[in-house]
Image (cartoon, rainbow, N blue to C red; front, side, top):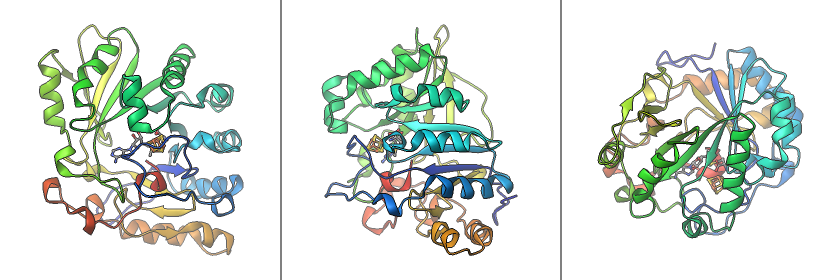
Amino acid sequence: MLIDSHHRVHNYLRISLTDNCNLRCFYCMPEEDYEFTPHSRLMQPEEIESLAKLFVDNGVNKIRLTGGEPLVRKDAADIILRLAKLPVKLTLTTNATRLHDFVTALEAAKVSSLNISLDTLDPDKFNIITRRNNFTKVMDNIQLMIERNFHVKVNVVVMKGMNDQEINDFIAWTKDTPIHVRFIEYMPFEGNRWTSNQVFTWGEMLEEISGKYKPIALPGDVHDTAKKYKIEGHLGTFAVISTMSSPFCGACNRLRLTADGKMKNCLFSKEETDLLSALRGGQDVLALIKNSIASKAKELGGQFTKDFEKIHTEDLQNRSMISIGG
Ligand code: SAM
Ligand code: SF4
C-alpha cells in the first residue's frame, strides 16, 4: 500500500497523456507562448502501462487519464485499451472535442464515467475562454455520450465576472438532462494570471443557487473532492469542488504522473520525481514512488494555506495546469 506520513492511503492515480491541447483555456495555459513537450519525451504506451501496473500492484484501484487534452494523442485509444486490462476503475477527463472518435474504444475499455469540461453555455463566451470555436462540437458530444449511457460529469471552473452569472443556467440544464455539474473554484497555477478576487467560492455559489433553488446536500465518500447536492425533481445533480475556500487534503488519496513521466504527490507540490528516466534506466522505480509519497506535505503541497486571499502567486512554485494534468 502507498501510505504517506499523515496515514493517508493512496489508491487513485491521475495520468497525464500529453500537455498538448486543441483548446487554449486562459485559466489553464500560461499567457506567454507555451511549447508542448515533443512526443519522444512523453511516456510511450508500454511505459505508461508498466508504470500504471507498478502503482496498481501497490494498491491503486482507480486511474484517471487527463492532460492537456488526452484525446489529441494519436495513440490514445491504444493507451486506453492497455490500461483497461488492469484491475482498476478507468476514467477520463476531456474537453469532449474529439470524443465522437473514441466512443467504441471507451466502450470496449468499459469506461463508464467521463468528466467533460465546459465553462459556459454561451457560444461567444466559449470562444473567449477557450480561444477556439468548438462550442457546438462539445455540446453535440456531451449529448452523444449521454445517449450512449455514459455517466457524464461537467466540470465548470467558476471565475468571478466571467461565468459566475451562469451558475443557475447550469443548474437549469440538470432539470431534464442526466448530467452532473461540478463547479470548481478557480485555482492558481504558473502563468494563469490568477488573482484571489476572481475566486467565486463554494459559499458564494450556494448563495447564488439558493436564491432560485433549494439545494439538498447528498452524502459523500470520505475521499470525495466534491460536495454534492441535488435539486428535487432534477434528473442531474451538482457539486462544488472547494479547493481554495475549503480544501479537502485530510483524506487525500491522489497521486499524479505528468506526461513526461514525473510523479507529483500533490497538485500543488513543488517537487517532482522522475519515474520515466528511472524506468528507462532500469532503476528501482517503486523505491522512488515510496520516497515521493513519504515526503507528501500535509496540505496544498505545503505552498499555501486555505487563507487564499493571502496567496502571492509569484511565490508559488508549480507547473501550469496544462502541464501537470488536471
Ligand atoms: N483537457 C481536459 C479538460 O479540459 O477537461 C483535461 C485536462 S484539464 C487541465 C483538467 C481540468 O482542470 C479541467 O476540468 C479544467 O477545467 C481544470 N482546470 C484547469 N485549470 C484550472 C484552474 N486554474 N482552476 C481550476 N480548474 C482548472
Ligand atoms: Fe486544454 Fe483542458 Fe486546459 Fe482547456 S482546460 S486548455 S481543454 S487542457
